[in-house]
Amino acid sequence: MEKLKVRDIVRVIEDFAPLSLQEKWDNSGLCIGSPESPVSSVLLGLDCTPELVDEAAACGADMIVTHHPLIFSGLKKISPDDPVGAAVIKAVAGGISVYASHTASDKVISGVSGAMAARLGLANISVLDPDENGNGLGAVGELPCPMSADEATAYVKTKFSLKALRCSRPVAGKISKVALCGGSGSSLIGKAMESGAQLYITGDVSYHHFFTPDGFMLMDIGHYESEKDIVAILFSLIKKNFPNFAVRITENVNSNPIYYF
Figure (tube, rainbow, N blue to C red):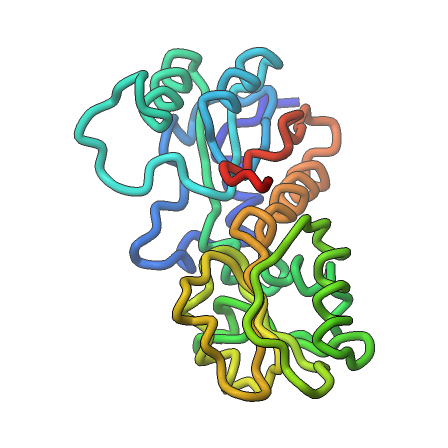
């Protein structure tokens, strides 16, 4: 069997989440390496940290696939004293290609937001903010059964294995319709209200957004917590297409830079 190349792994990911879907400000795609480089093993994680690159080198992986891009914008310097610079130096020195799917995976319904909906067991799921082709950010669906605000809070904490979450004033009635968006989803609060959802779940919500109108409730479960399932999805895609190929998820599964005490 001919040895796989970076472009073979990229093709599988982009068949699932086409790079053309990414947001204009994003930097998804191959940021280190050549599409023609041979690949013997892939390591997956949510963030391309220096520790992840070290792990890739230690386990013999010559390609890293993450959700978040290692490089978001132009680098004015590459220093080992900076986490991004350190990861770049380690990857280049080790001959490790680095790819990220990010907002391309955010904008397919079976990606980040779809995984959130699946965790909650939502039914009748659709894209919250669709484009002309039906792709877009966020998802909206119906809970398995209507819940009070207290019940919904406990349910979300259990399903996402949360120590805590931030929440707006609880709604008085039952919650049946839920909108959600992985990552930083404050820009879709208006879309969530328009969808008729009584609850919107996302991450990175600022203080003033928690002043919500009657009948609408907002939950911030955390950026990492809302996106972490995409790693397993990308793993399954690669494994399904190349069943005898060495692909693994990082042993340091939790790369969340935020700590709760």
